[in-house]
Image (cartoon, rainbow, N blue to C red; front, side, top):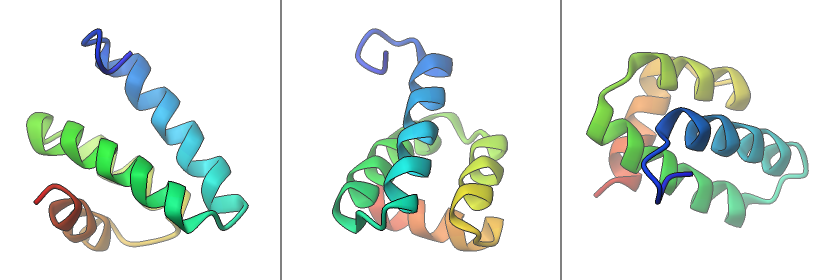
Length: 73
């Protein structure tokens, strides 16, 4: 979905993957998923994406934003 520029579907799929990988404490794959989400966030600056990720990871929106900016470098 991301390659085909269907960002809403890509975001939905990546958030679901993040939820699953975080639940199973698969930190490596959580990192890969966050890297993909960071690319989308840095391009779109969609604040709702930060909120969604913060809910999945039980972090503040500010912490998620800092995290995504690091992954996007």
